[in-house]
Length: 463
Image (cartoon, rainbow, N blue to C red):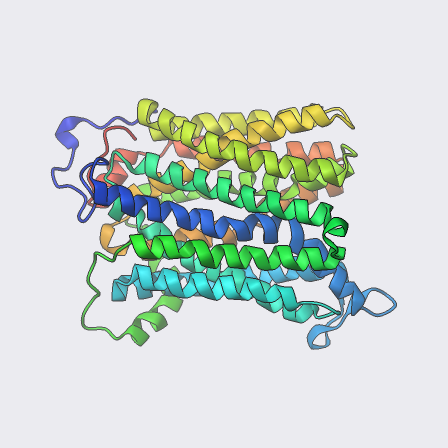
């Protein structure tokens, strides 16, 4: 399962543009800059997406609702509490359309750094604008969120595509894991500060709504400010393509999903890995999304316990990502990811047995989730970077991102269907085991050395 490559099969050429050794001072500086974009943008995921915006958007939508609890955007009848889920859905659809275009444009121009800057600041300023979403301005808030979430996805395409440039094959797991770990630390730190503001808003002379607005805006300020670090440290390496206008690259990008899918037919190992990733990552995302609902509805735990668990996950995930990165270097990346899927399976099964009202049991499970969450995602990103041709990294990472976002409805659908059929949250949470078992089986079938060679990349010491 380690897929250790035979020396006779190892490609002789190094990764073009990638540093040869982590001891190189310039390479270390560039990597530190790269890590800080995870630190910068994770504030949006934790403060805005996970904790504050959903309830706040429902509140301001209710202020604009009629007596039956409906708002009427574009003449449609929408429940006020459904505005945020619909906004998330719209942002996913827009990402499916735009992320391939972003990847195509990056590969055409060679301007990864500039693309990162444009979308990072577009998202950060849209997030800051949420401060002004008051007095029933739910459409304004929803529109800003859609812009910010789409911009985040586009910026992450550029960010991820730097990974093969800044880390050689044997260093990629560690570099990717550090990025994820630092991201969890940054997102958790700002969230902790914002929760202090929110819980003690009266002592600061603020209303609850004002505390939420300041928290939302702070995520944008954090995102914008810390993005300066990667922009100073990162550099473009690859010249743009010739013979095609930038506008032509953008137009082609909108059709890039189909093009990439057709190209994937010639890369069966890459396609198999993507399929495995989509399956098990959907299980991961569903647990992250619905764990708060399970805690409050089934375990009867209070909101303060849920918030504490979110913080615990963030900080434990920092160490967990680094630990799994080290284990990957010793035992092989594929083996460690497979082990993490076993851990996720045990998490789901254990959640079924949690006693109602037990804070200790729930927090212990949250700690286990944090330990495996960051490493699973970081090592998956690292593995994928080996399986794509270097001249098309941004295009493929665009597909990687839309594949991630575009299938995020499968897990919630299975959960909802199980809940509908059994009327049991415990049965619904156990239904998610299928994603980790199926992902495990699919990942075992992935012949990583074959896929890496097919992409024209050098084989790392262990995969």
